[in-house]
Image: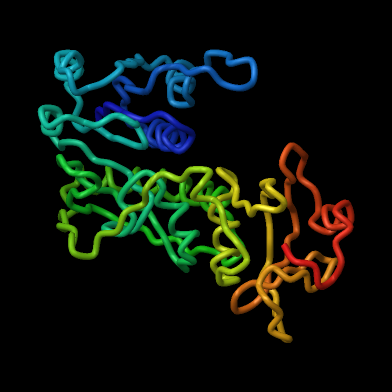
Length: 306
């Protein structure tokens, strides 16, 4: 199938690679503009552009598609289908039906659950046992189009968002290839979403990542998993942010008050309805270290309050 591919980050590059490996003709790639990266702010091409350049695929990087400046280019490319994976630009109405099979999108949730930009993270933050990928027909709404194909993915109770993202990206790439085969064969029936069951997955930020020990222990555990690798969950201690990269659930048999240090090796802190073991933390201005080492540096004792 002749494909116009629109995508930007690593998950999109993995999907693009899968489409090429399956023998599809990618006539061009649309991706976001190069951005400064790292301490030295070196101008860096997005992963999809890098892959396309390696494979000799024409690359376009318009600031927006809304102004119509790319419409003639896209029509001239005459794709059979437009495939969108984490592009980062809104596809305007006039482009939704340019291709024979329209525009399809890979979304990393089981729609209509978790529409928006951070579906994997919110599945972990909410302690879900399952997520998945949905191949959907793009329409004018935010992840509201008819669903063509879904593939569930189980979530391990200790898995971080970053770990889950890697697994879901691989599943998504394979599911996308399968969807295209079935679309071409006329074997897929679009299924309208039940909009009454829709939930949103808004972007995360550093303030969202805050927790405190008065919260439920399971909530804290999910927050630490869901905010890893970014923006990283944290709690305040003496006016400083202490990031928590890894934790485990524990018991609070004596019913100690939330925030009470229950043990030092490993560092175990009481929460509401349980306790959490702080395995790896990063003190403000410092480097990641074992929670036990941080407690020793702070000269914490059993019974102290965090």
